[in-house]
Image (cartoon, rainbow, N blue to C red; front, side, top):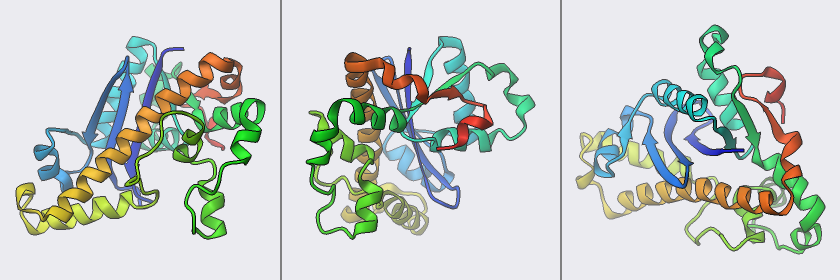
Length: 231
C-alpha cells in the first residue's frame, strides 16, 4: 500500500480553513478559504478553493496509485460532499480509502490492550463525556508510540483559533503583520496542530504496518462508495 495522509481543518458548518497532507515523506499544507488570504501569504502557503485542492489530490492519488489515509471517515465524507455528482468522479472510481482510526482500534485490541487501558485520561480534569470522546483521538492513541503531541496541542480549539485569526485579518485588511502577538500565536498553533495530526498518522501507519498489517484489511473501502461512509 502506498500511503497518502490527509487531514482537513474545517468547522461543523462546513467552512474550510486548511488541509495538511503527506506523500512520499513530504509534508505540505494548503489554505482553503479567502478569509485567510493574509495568513496564507505570510506563511507562504498556497491558497486554493476546496474543490480545486481536492481535484488536484484525486488526480495525484489516481496517477501515482496512492491509498488515501485519514483518521476516521470525516475526510471521505468531505470529499464525497464536494463531488455529489458521481458522474464527475468516474475517473476516480478505483481510489481506495483507509480509515486509520478503525485500524488503530483493531491494532490496540490485538496488541496494545493492556498498555492502552493503563493510560490516564488524555486530558486530566476533563468531564467524563469529553474523556470518552478523546479516548481514541489520534493524539491519545499516539501515547502508545514515541511520537507525542506537544503541550500546546489543544483538542477542540483549532476552530476557535482559526476564527480568531479570520476576525483579526478582516479588521486589518488581510495584513498578517499587523496582528497582535497573541493572534499570530493562534495561527501558528493551528498550523502545528494540523501538522502533528498528519505526521502522527504516518508514524502510526508505519508502526501498525510493521507489527500487523492485517489490522488494515477491514478498514479499507472505495473512496466514492456510499457503503464506506459509515463509521
